[in-house]
Image (cartoon, rainbow, N blue to C red; front, side, top):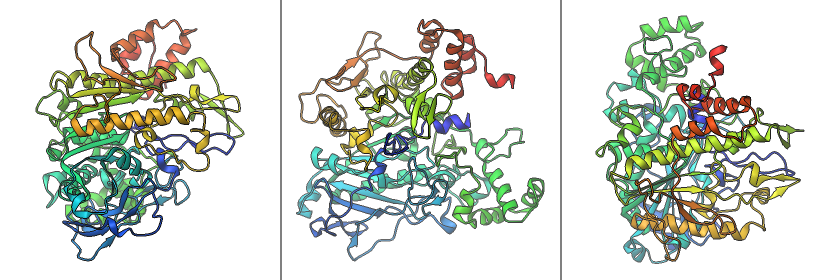
Length: 619
């Protein structure tokens, strides 16, 4: 289950195999192939803004917006501030040139999304990484800009909460064409963002004791927006948090977290999830009565004691650890070099690594978890929410899974069993929609009538390359909606293999539609007819069985836009698995069910109901 919990929220897109085949950048890091906006002619002093922290100067970005990059929202969480709540950054008096991104947070380099400045698997980034970026419509009059209260969209990147960076996302077009202010943010990742240990609780606040440091970072960044965004023309009383994959998961965490109440006013969850860990999983050793995760903080401490030659093996490290005081252990852990600490985790081959996160601590996150909090009217923010997934989420993962696809000569994809591939992708994406959208909307809609909205992204007009129909093999895969939301297509030299001249009109039209819906939701709390009006009415989720529920987002050349009523439920999916006549043999039916079980999309009793058994049970 540990593997499941990070792989299915993976923000990938497509791996660049060669110039013959196709680029696949990361899904929630889809913009990764571009280096982000670069100053065209250095600082633009019409962008000088006076903020509570001090004056800042940005530049004019590639879409004509003003851009300010690398603005610190907290002190560097290093030394004694490692695994502490973010602290306010010192102010400055001279204009700060905000012309380049701040450092990415510590992570493994990955071809699939995060830091590309080193070989895959190498440690990259810096603990001094708590920076954000602001994109706003260009305005040469700072005083006039400060009087303009535009909706603010606060983007949280994905990456399994172990990789990723705000530098991959250009909010310039969204800001310039939709008259909004866009903020993108870094937050601590992996071992630095989610680490819970009793030794770190001495002198700590309740929030720090939770181990959910990444969420504290996001709350601090939202606090910065509240206090600073007015200087850039944004309305601190109208902030929309939005994110994809792990970013969507983080949106749901903020939505249910007491520490974030009042810091945002709408929420958009793109392909998110609700999983959460019990606190003991984050800190206990594996042999405890309540067994910890194999990468719990205690297991990491034992590994570091061996690595630092304080003990010969794990048994010896346990003896050393038993003799250490809590302050000694805290000092030992905080004294570890960042890259050495990261090396105690195992790169999954794509930069991400398995570790316990986040924690249902009862302070930062509710004890009954995200799902439990959503079921309580007082357990979550009382603000409008949009929930959505992509029709073919899991095709992305299956495409690069050697169990389903062979890559001849390392570049030529050959699907081993087309029936199994397509049915597995269909059922897994349906289960994602059930757990990430439909079941949550059914819980929330009666509590918040008229303020819960759903969607499914269906665009699948990728080209056919060398006889390979990418629209069928990938379709509306995980993360493919991100460039439509940002309106940003510059994906590097191989980007044309995914987005070409032929599909340009359809994607531009759908992107304009989605940006209009997203920003109208940000402005008013309902996507309605879009920002300019005239779009098909996107109505709120109707919990009545016969009512409209979610908006289909597709090209007008295909199924187009329209409200739909079909509801996905776990029970309905299991029933369909039992009776679907498209399965030509029982073995394929069980292979699909077992794949869903392995990825966490089916429970053991559901697998048994389909007539299949857990393959691991016979090992």
